[in-house]
Picture 1 (cartoon, rainbow, N blue to C red):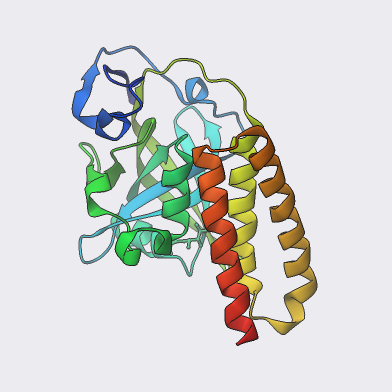
Picture 2: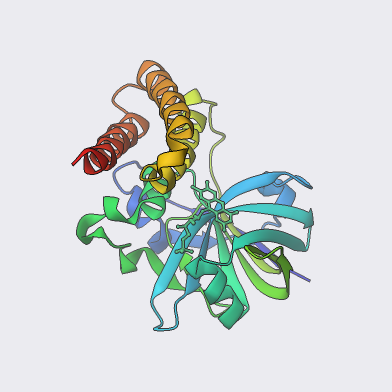
Length: 248
Ligand SMILES: Cc1cc2nc3c(=O)[nH]c(=O)nc-3n(C[C@H](O)[C@H](O)[C@H](O)COP(=O)(O)O)c2cc1C
């Protein structure tokens, strides 16, 4: 049975102090369930999965997470990923939810960080499982991996048993198209990066670049001078550098 806690962050609504949130968390013990966090049965939720590497360093990557029921989450892992190897070795992980697009971006593209690496200070050891949790997360789900089943030769289906759900208390948030558009652009960009050097994939790359351009236009129209437009500007620069590399 998962222990469910909702945490209250005293300074949550102070923008300048946003990055110090974790220091001020005070548990108030309100119950929260996966569905309270927006999970729906069968829906893919884009989360950050964090694990420990063999050398003990925290590792994190965006992954699609699917709720099977209130106690079980499913992740389809590419066997080639470090996350997959770590989960096979440690049989546990933290599923982190973050609405902070910059954090999501810098975990997706590690090279966007200073030194090109994830800041180790972003993580702390979780209490219930041997995995690092993202200190800036809006919510974390500690999971034990009870089953690993191959999906063909490339992927593994990990069944995750929910051990603990922790969430910060947050004001309701307005919908802004910039959030979805930036997330969509980040996902497309991971594919561009994967295919950009492959001759046979250039049609697909052009299509993806067009979609990213559309996302960029939306973001700059609905949220100029925002964290979204900053992420998009960095992403567009990064994509151009990949293009240049192929033209050299
Ligand atoms: C939004 C998003 C969702 C993703 N979902 C998955 C997924 O469900 N399974 C997977 O194996 N990779 C997924 N990826 C790709 C991994 O994040 C990517 O391969 C990453 O480099 C793996 O990092 P790692 O090798 O450190 O584990 C996703 C990427 C993004 C941007």
